[in-house]
Image 1: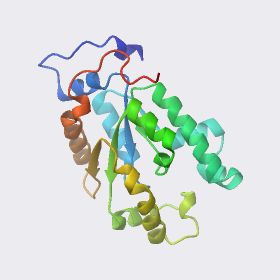
Image 2 (image 1 turned 45 degrees about the vertical axis):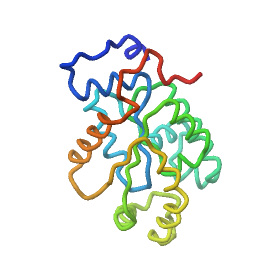
Image 3 (image 1 turned 90 degrees about the vertical axis):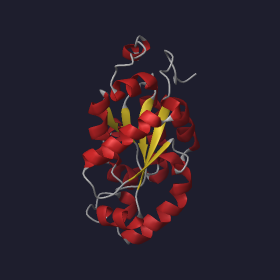
Amino acid sequence: MTRFASAKEPSFAATREERIRAALGTRSIVMVGMPGCGKSALGKRLAPRLGLPFVDVDDEIERAAGKTIREIFADHGEASFRDGERKVIARLLAGGPQVLATGGGALMHEETRANIRLQGVSIWVKADAALLVRRVAKRNTRPLFEGRDPEAVVQELMAARHPLYAGADIIVESRDVPHEHMVEEIIEALARCPLLATPAAPGSGAAP
């Protein structure tokens, strides 16, 4: 986006957050992880710290489809939802920079993984099974959990998705601490991330 294309290299006196934002160039910060790990809650708090917009992919999918996620699953099935998810993520990444919270299954699509590698810096918000089960059990709006034992679903999804999440650029451990504490850890990790060691050149990360 133009506001980054003309960004100057930050001075030595620039804040840590300003250096991270300059180094991103046109890339987005992409939060990935299991349902209930806290991607959206953390992303909403991280974005203003970095002076970036926050976007929740599920919200964008619902807006584009004119239906809720549950309705999309019920009317068209998971395969159709995943295809729409792929398209929405590709569109959003092309319009970065931003903090983007993806759905738990977004990385199951190879094209999405490739787009995130090219146009993003990914953060896996990793959580143990007990924490995830406790959180998802409080909400009955997740289609993959409807009518099923939450613990069994969590274990099944972790087995399929953790190998993909493990390729993230940054991994942070989700736990029951104040969100602000977790955001500070994420910012520290971003500041140390080799991908953000130097400011990106104008247009860096843009799709070919």
